[in-house]
Amino acid sequence: MPAFRRRLRFTDMSGERSFEAEALVDSGATFSQLPAEAAEDLHLVGTRSRRFRLANGQVVERQLAHALIVLPETDEPPAPTTIVIGDRGSTPLLGTHDLDVFGLGIDTFGSRLIPRVLDLLNETGWPTI
Image 1 (tube, rainbow, N blue to C red):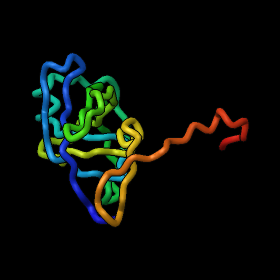
Image 2 (image 1 turned 45 degrees about the horizontal axis):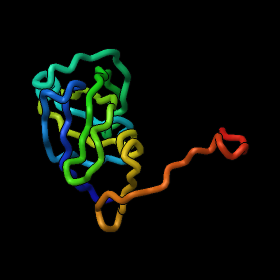
Image 3 (image 1 turned 120 degrees about the vertical axis):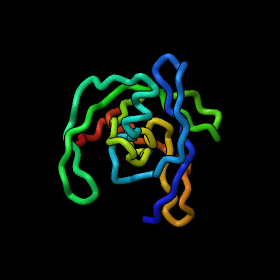
């Protein structure tokens, strides 16, 4: 899939401090990511750590923190989310968890975000895996 970027704003949970960046839309990333220096500027504190596999296959441990994420080009309200605190200088990422939060999918041909219908399978009575 061709890589593309989208302008995002991350804020602390109070909405007082913010960090805006062109984030890489990454359908291979579960969570969104902020570089460590941006997390520090927002006074984000890691609440727990998780192991992640990087694109090169390396497994690393990273801290998770709570923040709000905003898509400035939409009228969507800020959404609470869990983000990964990356290394210093790492690329801000928009992961699939937050795409789902905003009800967005990826148009791979047009390299853009598009609205999508989310799944809520437990309402159907059909068994799920």
